[in-house]
Image (tube, rainbow, N blue to C red; front, side):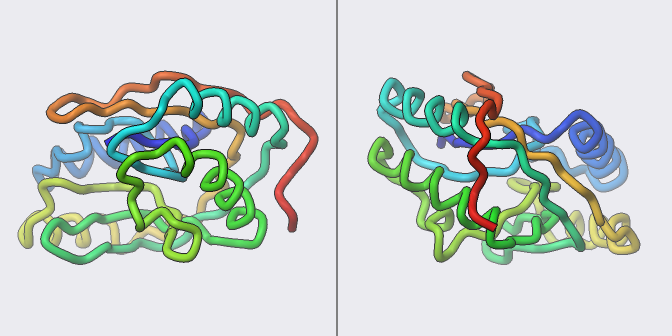
Length: 185
């Protein structure tokens, strides 16, 4: 799977790396090492027409203005492979920017994840995935449940993460926001 993401600002990036180390040391959670890049995902697909995608994403970033979002709480995507995450509060501005990313990227995607479609998308920052079983989940919740995760996160870039099967995800392009246009509030 490949993705269009925003890399977290330096302070929140460091906080996430510290949390991942704690969850690995205390709970044995190492699945995050598959994509060890603190980020918020906008779009995920099995494949992209990368040349077209890079041009579309560069144009969007060039015309976008940085903005700030908030996180709060702790979340869990349930299922066969649970995911522990920090929810990002989905306000009008964030939803509108996501729609713009979706519209720019969807025509270039093969096997786009329906979980990232505008009506289904739940913005989040992943704490643990891939190896979350019941004992590790209980440990993670015990370690994390007392924290509020009330963060401000500045969104100021778009990046492409390439992750071929069996490989660790890698940042291919990081494009800073340079414009004066921001999503509608």
